[in-house]
Length: 327
Ligand code: SAM
Ligand code: SF4
Image (tube, rainbow, N blue to C red):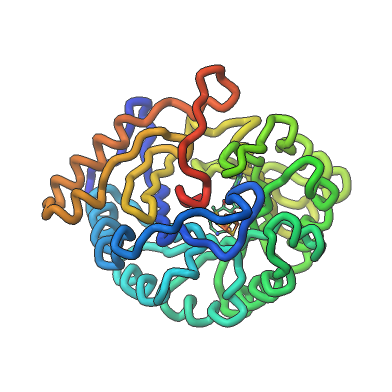
């Protein structure tokens, strides 16, 4: 310990997320084309042993104390609970981001394997609208998954809502009420240009300011001091919990971003919007020592740019969609 993953702009990286699969059983319109994508072959995915090795290196060398498993849909990775058990041998907190579809059955199993925290994505509380967004008629199953996660003792349980103008902007207060009634933290995420169909435009982004004022006018809010986490946090003045807003587009948080990502096929990415990847899988499979892997990680973090540049004339969308990067 003692070293840090620090970039040229002085940002220290501690928020580590790893995608365990690029597959998904949903087709959310902001993330994946309706016809799906070509999935990676099994041998292209990092194995559980490889994921555990790189996590151990990050923990032992750089003070990383949490890992978030994501995807694609991470619960589609066979025996996910075995990976969680392996990771839980390390001194880290394990979090999961999921579409929630399997949680009614699996929340207890994942909890007992060592999962602590969970984020469940749900973008509408209206069954028809949910189906339009995800191309799956599964809203009730996702809500049952949220209830099962609470019952299993996962804490905190958060829900992720991608806020899109003309799609779910009429449900902001419904989500606030949903969270308040269940002690669930609702995180609204500004729609980012990572949709596979490239339908994103600035006008489709519902801004942090709009989300905040809609909720604040009915349930008054006050700011909670911000950490390096990407969400601005606000608590209800009446004590009924809190919300988060990830304003990646209108108030970019690049200046304090501490996120690093590994894709399901073992590519290290220093930014969600990066067009450059570092081949960690090759390093892991060619017998590299821990210190050689550290060299690669440090080099990759040093190459991080100061910001994502959305809105700049020279902004180039990443070649991968969100589901292939791991949100
Ligand atoms: N399948 C899991 C899920 O849906 O939670 C994990 C992967 S998903 C890519 C991770 C998060 O990214 C989800 O909360 C999803 O809503 C969010 N996301 C996907 N595409 C997005 C986009 N274009 N803009 C903002 N958030 C997006
Ligand atoms: Fe699948 Fe999650 Fe993307 Fe929806 S947001 S298509 S559930 S990876």
